[in-house]
Image 1 (cartoon, helix red, strand yellow):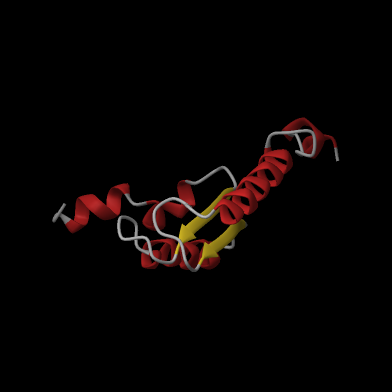
Image 2 (cartoon, rainbow, N blue to C red):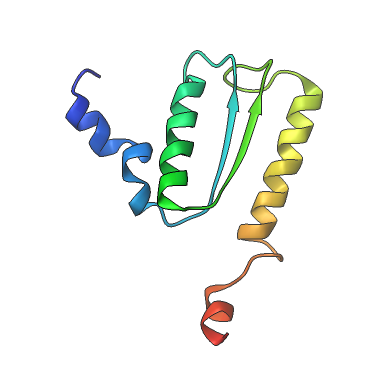
Length: 99
């Protein structure tokens, strides 16, 4: 699109204050569909807001990881993220309010 006002209104980077869930940002440095600069912009805005997030950039990958070793590393990272946030390792809201 070309409407910068509309794009900013829908952009996660410009709406980090509305993000409630933890994020895992994974990017291929050679991604032409979603350039690394967009992930870096989101990371910058999250840093400014003090929000936690996971971050991983794979230098030799594009939009989707094709190297088997890189995919396995990503899947492991993703499973650990899920466990911390929605699995057995997750801190439940009820646990936070009891403390």
